[in-house]
View 1 (cartoon, rainbow, N blue to C red):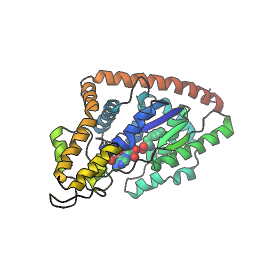
View 2 (view 1 turned 90 degrees about the vertical axis):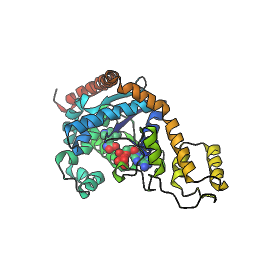
View 3 (view 1 turned 135 degrees about the vertical axis):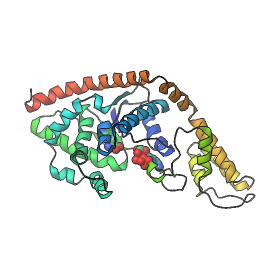
Length: 320
Ligand code: ADP
Ligand code: TRP
């Protein structure tokens, strides 16, 4: 299956991103033809300055490669390096009724949050449709908030196909396996906007400090602890198989250890899980030319498919 995902680069990644988005994506590449790009044209809609956008783009590339995007298996590029997408975006705009865009939840939510509306924000779903249709994508794995955008893509493609012939493949969305919402150090959903995240790549000491800030109940040392609603347990469980979870539950119930011990244990789990990724990250950070080569190779591959598609589109509508 041809699977396409876009990554919105928006700063440091955290444990919630890792389990909720990165790991599932890395697993997809084993059995599919995976296309993954960093959606920097999309990020432009909310970007504040040039340096930040540039930095976020390269950080995302390094981080995703470090956690396991394999450039030999996956086509990985930066959206703006394949500019065909903008031509298709304009053409698709003609097949996008205003009413369709006006109904977009994501646009309405962003405006409600106070982001001032501009045309790019409004037409964001058309660019996303161009990303998807340009590469004959069959499956788009998305979070719930993006399902509507894939449905809009199907509407736009259907309108085009009905008027000008069967050019586009209709994509299906696939809601990523329900990954439970990962809690932050305060027990709310972990999010970079709530200042409750544990960042993915921290040095060991700051990581321990961050883990020490996890809010837990105030049961005194020596008494059995409840694991059921404990944030440290919830985070640690992400790293454990069933037998290991039971072992940890037994340690909670024994009353011999306090939350401090479990915070140390959690730090160890995070540190160990990311050991290989950390090494790769060190490597890529000191070999940025390799990262750029990987992205250039990905852009070339995506561009080859896109330019063939664009040729068919241009002929179909009379531009060629
Ligand atoms: P943030 O809330 O920190 O801004 P994003 O909205 O940029 O995170 O999320 C990027 C990806 O990571 C999305 O696919 C999202 O579903 C996933 N993700 C983010 N936070 C969590 C979380 N706490 N639990 C599970 N998945 C998450
Ligand atoms: N809008 C997506 C998000 O915010 C990112 C994205 C852009 C995307 N283009 C895409 C995702 C195409 C899948 C397919 O997460």
